[in-house]
Structure formats: C-alpha cells, structure tokens
Length: 115
Picture (cartoon, rainbow, N blue to C red):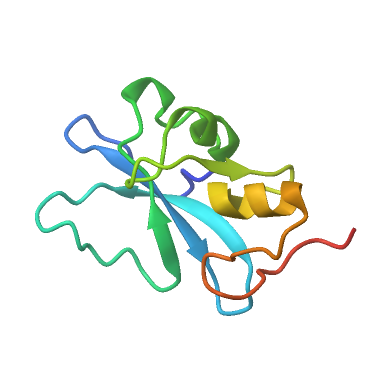
C-alpha cells in the first residue's frame, strides 16, 4: 500500500506513518510530516499510533510493509502489516499466534478480511 499518495516530500521535513483505525474498524496507514513542536499534532481522526521518523532512503519508494520491517512505533515497539496492508501491534500478533483472547489496540476487533 502506497502511503505517500497526496504527500509532497521535500528536503526540509521529516516524515512518519500514522496508523489509523476508522469508525468502521478499517485499519490503514498514511504518511505525514512529523511534528516535533509539542508531540501532540492532530493527524486527523482515527489515528491510533504514529511511527518513529522514516529514514530518508525509504521516503516515497517504500510501502507500509517495508516501513513496518524497519521503523518502529514512536514508543519503540514494533508493528506488523499483513498481506492486506492491515496493521497490528506486537501484542495483537502475539495473542493471535498464542491462541489467546486478543488485546485489540482500541478494545474491539478491527474490520478484518474474511478467512
């Protein structure tokens, strides 16, 4: 999934990915300019997490799956992206793999593709 659509990359800004969960439970990511002024930038509705700054060599050419392998969340925790470009936290992935009740990031199961 190309998260750079609509984002004009310049040499002066740094960029992050924001991980969003919409009101319908749909999860996706998009690129945004990193805001270091107060750490509380409004990246829009539904933002659940943001990543650390994305390295320059990945800007504009990497998709969210590539980014998830190299860039952690701003908390330092890893995140994962499946083949449908749906993001998951480390806790969610561990719970799924261990067969435990999943501790969803927003407290309820997101919209997932049919099995």
